[in-house]
Length: 208
Image 1: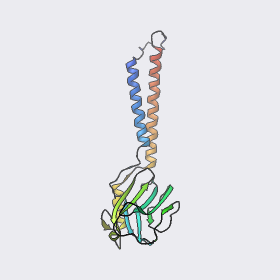
Image 2: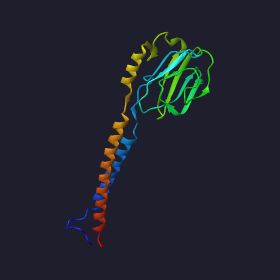
Image 3: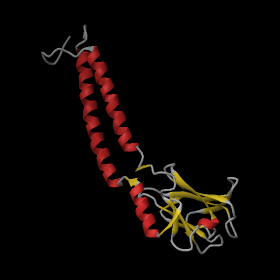
Image 4: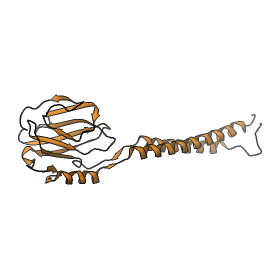
């Protein structure tokens, strides 16, 4: 036995407890760094539908966080089949999509529409690049002549933006990155301290 000081070496129980603590710290840091970028909103909070200039006579307004990208926008018919659908591999920062108005930059039209929206129940569904999204149910007759339809009522577009901003809590990308770095540094210190604990236990074993 050749300890570097007169301190008693840690016991195996202490080493095991320290290992569990390190794992918990690492798991917490991973959750902070890789956790969701925004607080999920209720269904329909981030979508509005308004009259549009395209052949379908409608456009979809999307509220998104600064670090989010829209990857799909579609209108589903009464049977759940898409009557119009566009998708983007890279995602888009646009917040307004004209139904049937051609493919926005970076999008491909998978299901085109060349006339007005069909009568009967419809659903507008938007996909976000983090795997989340939103949907809203309505009928073509529900779309107001002025303003937008949001949460089942006609409101001004500014009111929709205000509501959506209050419903969707976005995480600041720069703030999140700084916090993640600080937690990562703390985790590194904990891990190094634990390695020192393991080394002291190893050197203090009988016969070392």
